[in-house]
Image (tube, rainbow, N blue to C red):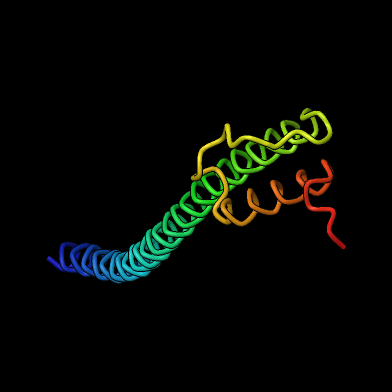
Length: 127
């Protein structure tokens, strides 16, 4: 019976050592899972921040493009008005073939252009 007792004692010691190794492995795995969860949380947060920034950049570029398109449109209108003015023969009173909405200070500009062309015609030559 002492043989069984020694063998049982040896098996019990091996079982206890195995149990201790399992505790250590479980603790190590718990730490790894915790680190993975923290990393996942950090990645999620960084992803959210990146998406917010990308949305802001996209929104800013959209507004900027809209502003540029509007500016280009206004520049083209002004360029056309300028060429129309240059195409007028000297002394000819310029007609307003463009709408009042094309240029905001349009009434003042048109009045000055008319008075200038009348002056060039010699209509207002009183000194």
